[in-house]
Image 1 (cartoon, rainbow, N blue to C red):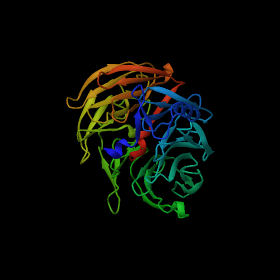
Image 2: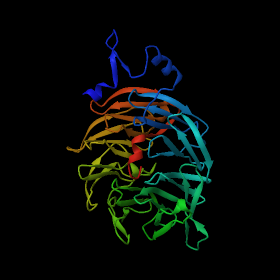
Image 3: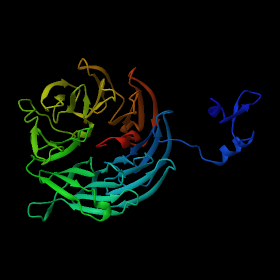
Image 4: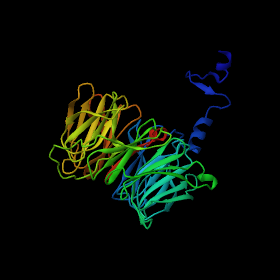
Length: 408
């Protein structure tokens, strides 16, 4: 106790303790001379797609901290974070790659690396950024500190004169990136552990995975990479723990026998939920959420829902699944109780609910309501709205807890 008490001087007349070496009156002057210190664990970034801007928000006080503008075409933008959660990297549809300092609330660097980009990932050591491109087709690798190009992977297929759009780009353990070739029907694994030292990526190419793979995800342990197929029912799965990876078909024909509807928007597979030993995933072209056993990837059931699901997201404790939907039914949210498999709440926040994001422990859910120009915050216990924040055509919401997760 003696050592612990040495950090404090005696009490003032009001009973308040003074820090060692700080005289009365000096503390206030110091506070006015320095910026307010804060951590990054409760921060997030909201894409404002129509204006090429982002908001930096904080979840503890549920407030906006700053807006950063002139970030290009953010109509289909995604974000990853540095390991220390200080920097956000924004991948824009116009091929822009932007680096944002969340603490100084400013744009650090921005480059145009391609003509049409679809997303990106950051390596597990935080030193490499990978960007997935439609035009020209392929993946480029950048130094996350300087945004300097360190490797280029053209997605050549067929006669090698053709370049495929690349989709479903994720990070995998060991400074690897995995992505899918939409036009070629292939999955490539790029080992980039030598890229910062001038080495080339080591590529593993898996062919004939199925027709028109449109998106993909990686399981939270970094083991299973799963690509959705738009050209046929079913999915392609790769076990990345295998010494020689091979493609296996899962959920083959899950939609056959049902009347398909027009597909208004492809679901995002990174919005899969995993809870209670099952995956919960959107069924393409159906008003259903599929229940898939997480060990052998067999479908065990389904839940009828309001429309075509886009994001099927699990609260961090796995107790709830929140679902939003494609146009024209995108004004609705449904909440599924996992133990019973029943929908326990349905509400209509407004037109074009595009994205949802839980806080790290899941006590709040933030959602973007694009056509209402606002962000809503919900209490996940009461299922009631807590507050709303104004935003300009908001879409993606990305919180800094993603920095410590594989595939996000």
